Image: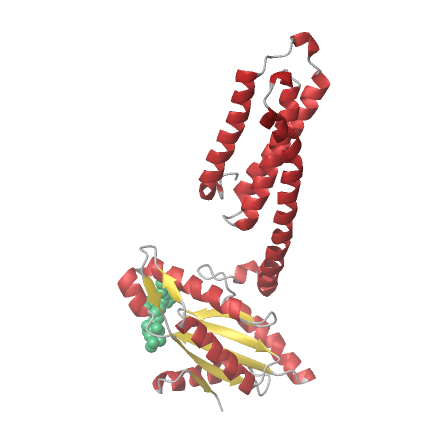
Length: 307
Ligand SMILES: Nc1nc2c(ncn2[C@@H]2O[C@H](COP(=O)(O)OP(=O)(O)OP(=O)(O)O)[C@@H](O)[C@H]2O)c(=O)[nH]1
């Protein structure tokens, strides 16, 4: 489990190990060992354990986080705190009086430096978490019913959409809350499969689903309808607003380039069909959205709103 993100952090592993090695080596070369009788065992165990725990935290951070500013700040901070602790620990074993000035500087400067780096890192971590939480909220409803998650895109499947839509339509009817269904279909997606293979096609579908998710509001629900077709349930939205959202989504796909494993850029485009829920009939609503999509495709238009 500790290996999960480790391969992204080889530079940190090399730098950290070298730094620790240099500190111990310098001490071993310059400072004499204390006589065994002067060893304070309680301090040695306490300070050694504290240093080991901090080092373990650094490994945990590296194992669970991707590359980036927050990870760098947290690991640099933890390593600085670890260095101060290590010096404290080595202090118990080696006679430090003979040590050069910079060695004692490590001991006194590393702790405040490490604390500062950790504080800045945790600050940015919090900001990052706010964004992540926003994304998770969009998927939360879905994860509660994980049997309805589509394996390729991690979006809801059509079964979930129907279940959800059924409830949403009852609310529409009872409380007059407008609901609009948007079907968005990628154009000539078969060309992607043909040119780059099916697994690259799968990756492109996943990338598009992430892109759509990012461009939707918290209360909207996106599902993989089938193949290269996505269904989006726009909460509290009437036709006109839905059409603006549809154009934005199509434009987002148009300006997006999926990068293949081979490094090539794949450009995609899409068409949208929109249907506003007039009553509680689920199948009729889906059929009208499909019909609108067909009309838009045939007319080479970006979107079409069902009458
Ligand atoms: N890689 C991948 N491809 C899929 C998946 N599901 C469907 N497809 C492909 O999506 C393509 C959909 O074909 P069509 O419905 O003709 O759509 P299209 O090629 O986008 O053409 P138009 O919609 O008419 O522009 C087919 O080539 C399917 O093989 C999938 O899960 N993974």
